[in-house]
Length: 150
Image 1: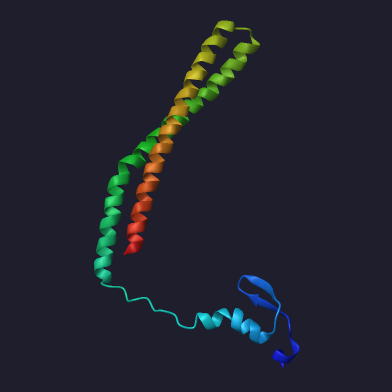
Image 2: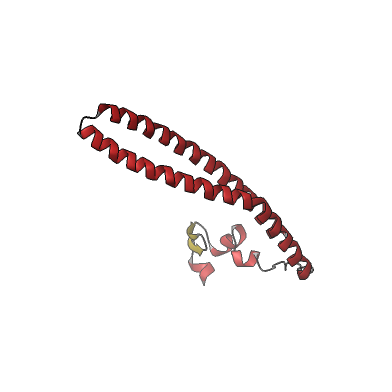
């Protein structure tokens, strides 16, 4: 009955609805159903020796940790230093406001110079932090790829 009545179809598939200008037989010839295409699924070969894979994975994790431990310590140190300098910066900004309001021009100049130096240090530390974190991320990604390949 579908073949005799329909000359246009709306096909609902995984990607949404599509309009097809033609009969059901034309649809089957030109497009067909996805389910018919995927009837044969290939089974993945069984995992080889699970015990050996676990050993290899543990060795990869150990190597990764060995490479990233010193970098992680460096990241913690950089973060701590940045926090300390930013705390001093906040204090110096408050002092600068007070010195400005009380017309202490010499103190304003000193604080302005100090703030500028501290902001420069923070910027350099952030750059170093970014480089170090990128190194960690790269190492982690490479080892994750190796572990997934097992």
